[in-house]
Image (tube, rainbow, N blue to C red):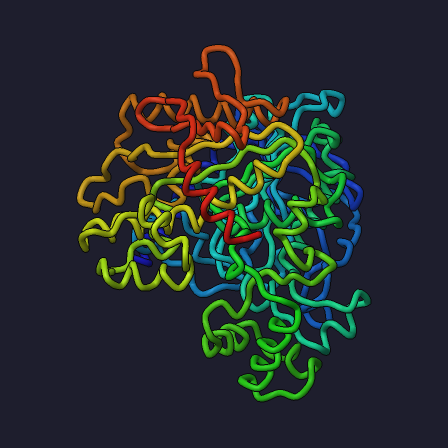
Length: 511
């Protein structure tokens, strides 16, 4: 399986590379870059936006990229960030997985696709941030390709950022040397550095630095939530698309004190007493030490610098970056929120009695558990809301600008000889980015029709902050009183009040 994946990957890029001509050089702040021309679209792959975060720069905020002389060939993806060896698993076939190699700490690069003929065009910009649970991922995944979006008039950018211990480890010694009395969140600082690069350089590719939309899925969606929250990102983007998840679950983030304690355990497990010695460890050694840590050791940190100390309070007070938002979830997200557990009705009631107390009757009216099967379905719905629906609701309902909320319920066509995972987590991405042609399945017309509709919504939103446009079903703004959600299924339908009662009950616990 793994060797087959490598062969497919190499053949895919060899064939496509042969079709491309050299694109004209573009002048960036660091030097000239050349790329590839494919029809009307030019791509510039592996453009550095920061210095390699290696050696003494490991676990530091990204530093400026070095200038170069001559023309830098940017015709292939850079290395993906250090992570466990990428291998397809479960529903995530090779199209959704980082290339198996190369992997490196030297990973802070981005990619640009543009069909602009000159730097004067000022096309809207879409910056894509990948998912992967903050422990894996890459901008080089096949389904993140930017060619189709560029053909629709948007300059598309995909970025890399550090993951795992290298992206999120905090420690008292790191906080002391940082200059801002905090540590962790290097992944978000990478993303902010990439957005600063976009602001400074994207005009040279025909993009408008004053019309930038950030978009991401899963951990990428958590990142979007973080960037909306972060004062450090103010003015670097003007719209946001958050697909499947956010930080409005207190288990998603750590206090700085707890994150530093996890870092101290990392030092202990590594057998080192100083940061200098830990920085001498190889990336493979860092991965091995990471495997000794409890799950969730490396997650976003409420550090009071990159992120607010209390995300809920920050958004309720309207202190976030107020911009138009498009956000939503996939029906399969429920399993990632704990809803796929083999639970009995008795267990389900007992677990939620601890959480809801005197509101348990109101809870069970919305999440019934009269039988074991009913309890499992309620647990799945609860998991969906916990993982993604509630965060979408919070981002939209606390936003003073226009917000649009979706639910993706479409089940992609079966892959022959492969299990049917339904509308699974991440399955909406190729529809939104118009990359079904890079996902190996025998697509039906209903799939292709939804791909066109969704990618048009995404592009329209990037262009003007509103997904609506000619020939598209109307997508109403999300108002808390109505809670109207558009359902992206075989048919595209408006669903007023979807999960409204459930959200009101859950929100009452978080005040």
